[in-house]
Image 1 (cartoon, helix red, strand yellow):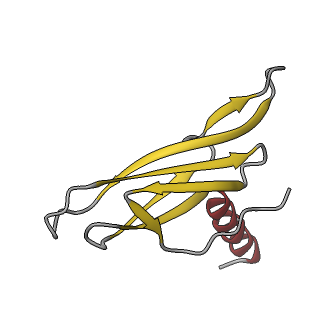
Image 2 (cartoon, helix red, strand yellow):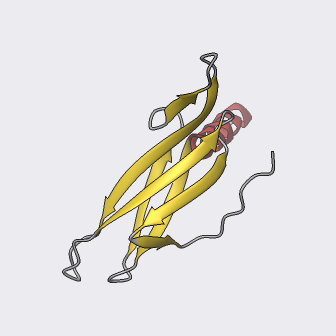
Image 3 (cartoon, rainbow, N blue to C red):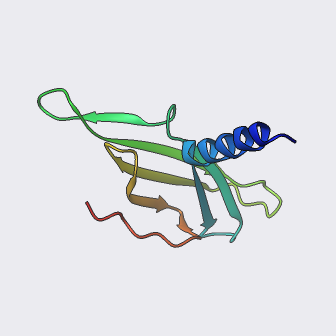
Length: 106
């Protein structure tokens, strides 16, 4: 592969990683790990201030398990992002997050 081809591939991989935010939660009832990803360009809803400027973003996703364990509980995930699309807070109803998270300091 040429140098230009490698560079193009590297840039594409980095932009893909920056476009999606991965989410992993464990169902409180059965323990199944549920995974999804949030498209930071399409899935977010804007929150506006009184002047009409974007103050931040939020998204709500409802995850369902595979049903292998006969658990059909829905796990609701709510994520809040700042105006730069950086994660500020998150909540899971019916489950707990699997990975570590530290809100950005800004």
